[in-house]
Length: 394
Image (cartoon, rainbow, N blue to C red; front, side, top):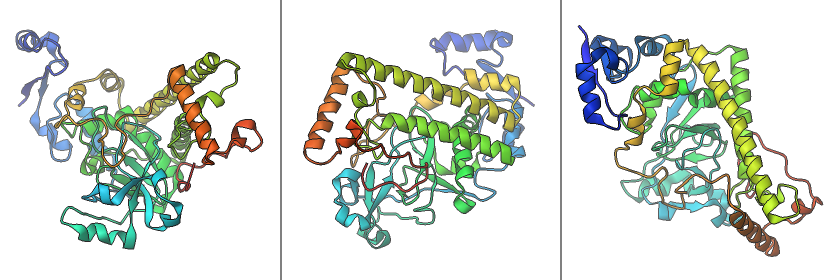
């Protein structure tokens, strides 16, 4: 026996949309009105009321293994309970005592494929002071220091995953998944899959608000890959990582920093250099959009999702409202222990770019930055691999 569900979360005039869904059932079918046999909900673990999706999408949960299967593992990390004591910005700790301070992934802003890790955590005696300080401290060490795939647990903008390099510790706000053998191709393929529209749709079927708990992703299905598919997805994720990191090379507080934006483009006048940088950013973002579209197409095919469901996922079938209605109204990234409160802007006006140039020049004067990178006397450093350990300085 089918049950009728009415959904008007996306409608601006909810009252009239609800009346239309009741009075004009045929016109509202599949948009504001859904008729589903509740027994089909059991296809998805914990039987969420995912009434807005088709039986075919629910069947993906039956046909494919969960993320935490076939050598993949995901878990939450450490909750220090006292960030002011145990957490610092990475540029604020002297290298002489870095033996006890390690890179610390702690959630952060929405960012797919790449995000710099800008914090350190005090890991004296394998985190014993955190465990002993008070009841709030919690440490799970199984996956620490391994390369993996991490994500921000809370975000109003949606789910975003990216590589976490080897040698890092992660927090409860930045759950992490690893693969057996720490194979970089398998990890990059997982980055591509988990940033696809198809994977996000599977995640949204299981939850009501923008809190991406580790258990939800553990239960989300992942398609089985041939060696060719794994290589293609890994290549696309690697390209996206490289492009996003290239924009971060202008950020003075990033491990990727090389030169301010105005010195990365060629021209004479300040305004012309600013315009050239903006054009470069637009080009990179267009390339990223093309990569995302290719990943989406490949993942739709790997999951066996038909054209009707692809269209429903792409156009939105009732998940947007749940993402926007965060349960506690939290910002996209929490402001604690130096954590960024917004995603780094990839573009800026000429004034902001000039300020970055002056800041860099002051750093050169004090010996923090090497002017030879700007003059060409010293070559720019080669790009690392996504899972290489982070350097001690940019």
